[in-house]
Amino acid sequence: MSRANLRNRCRQRPTLFLLLLLIFVWTTSCVLFMIKISTATTISQINSELISNVDVVPQSYRLGLSLYLENCANCHVAVPPQVIPTESWQIILRDSQHYGVQLPNLIDPPRQLVWNYLQVSSRRKSQQDEIIPYRIASSRYFKALHPGVKLPQKLNIKGCISCHPKVKNFDFRTLNSEWLD
Image (cartoon, rainbow, N blue to C red; front, side, top):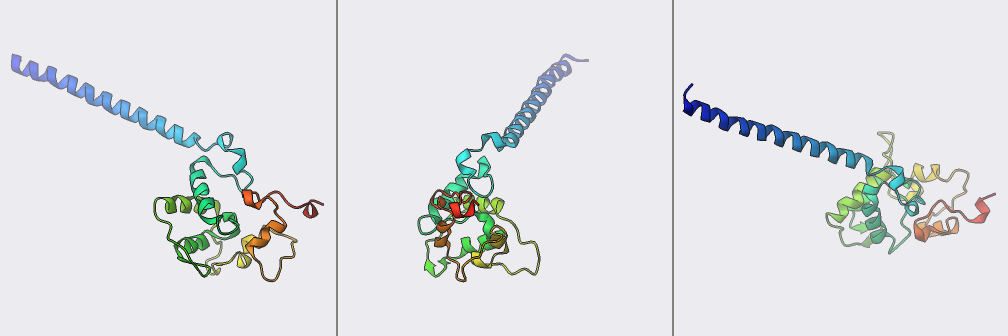
């Protein structure tokens, strides 16, 4: 074997070694990153003040929850996403004529963060032919969350406070004393 061939071979080995080392480091980094993501939303890391909602809000959706409250609770009670189906939220987020009131459009990325929160926190309609409710009074989910409650003929979300005194804090679990019997 000539000296030139031997030199070329010696140069290729470090290049191959560096390539394999780079692949190993990259793969290890990806695995560690995936482990971190998969454990980031464990129950122990969820803030107890956000548990007062109907469902627990994972860490990765808390910013969406905050933006939802910031944008919706300024005008009315921010209802839990669970009371209407996901499809209803999709319509509401796109509608600039929000129940007859002209709203400025929520733009991305905040709109996407709110949508991610609403999508993970609400429930999809279960039947294909089910009508998508635009108001909570028409939602079977709202009715299911209020078993045995005689709801007024004309339901108004401002009336939520009559049964849920801490609704301003997005606490729908705390009920007035008349419901605790």
